[in-house]
Length: 263
Length: 257
Picture 1 (cartoon, helix red, strand yellow):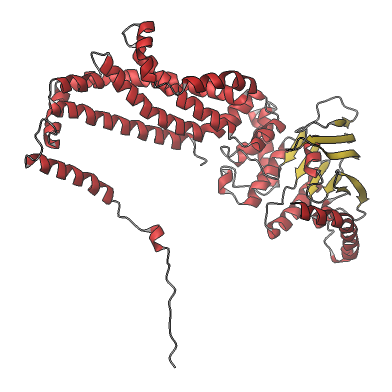
Picture 2 (picture 1 turned 90 degrees about the vertical axis):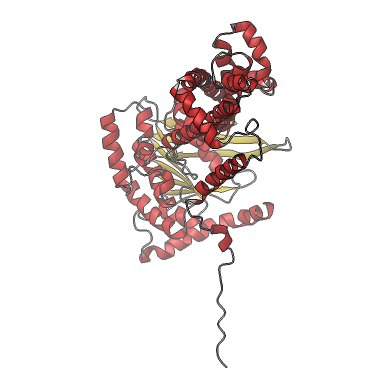
């Protein structure tokens, strides 16, 4: 009788499928093509959804006239300023709350009662406090960034392995150095999760604040062209926002890789 | 300097709010250049005791002190079971951590760092992060970090228990060689009887419920080369003696968990 050969095959091959690197590009160009086609065939009127080429054409015109740049700079200053302030405060307070049981007991209930307030609801109050200049917009972004960063820093600190703290103290670290050399780096991965979360919040608050009270800024621009029913220019603003969000995220990813090389 | 553990007792409050005595009536000393091994079944409080000696836990009663001629702050070096290298520091930066914190000059850090990295056999791995090292290599770095502060007392908490058997054997031999060069007073915790007999000048056998000293056994064998054929029967006798002291407790411990 001839031997029967029964080969055993990898039955979990579906877990590691190989995808060619050009596929993601294909997805996005496919979407743009379909979009363009729908507009060219007049299935949707251009007032509701202008073609990508029309958006690019009008966008280019806004760039060369300097209009887009002016709005972009106004928005960038606000968001970067607010983000920086919120981040620095959030990390600092998070470290303190995480390290000191006393500070934790006193301030954490306060933090958790303010945290759920949608920050944009505070804008009228903040405008009352700071007037209608740049301050309230920066402040509202800082406030929106502060909480997620604080809460992530706090939980990052709590998740630092106590044995590392014991080791550091054994080898002579004082409290400040324990925070600086053990707790801060140990919490850094979680802090970055907070930073990414806060980036989304910052963008949201930026646009909302600019729509409520601003002359310049991408939010104001989008609202302006919406009121005038110039959809192409409105869409140019929206695409710029998407680009901004993408850039923000990429920047943070890059920073994360730089600052956390041990992961 | 000599280290004295004087009448140490440790009680905990357990999850059911009952008071549990983990250690009771612990009295012993570690002489200068002496290698003392604490051995006992799981749950006998040997790690608790080491933590108390290491200043990471306070005793409920009694005290631990250094006794000597000089009036200086005694330095401790601890090798942790969990290794506890800082993941964001490379081998060199981890090894010199204690020197950095004691304010040693960069030059001194460099010289001592290199010296102890060479001693544990990590030359060439200075720039590696802990994550990139095997378990055995990580613990070498942990040992180098503890040696680098040139401690008055070296504490080792089951340093090789997470390693595979072959690596452990090699590490035990290397530890002995290192100890022979540095002659540090050492308190070593293990549940491995062979390891205890192989390394110790004196073995302190702990017992459970509550943790107390059952017997202190002096190992009357030359410090180096106890694994040689001619010492085999004596080695076995010591191991047997310790095992017979622990066996009952170990079986009880098994039933609890």
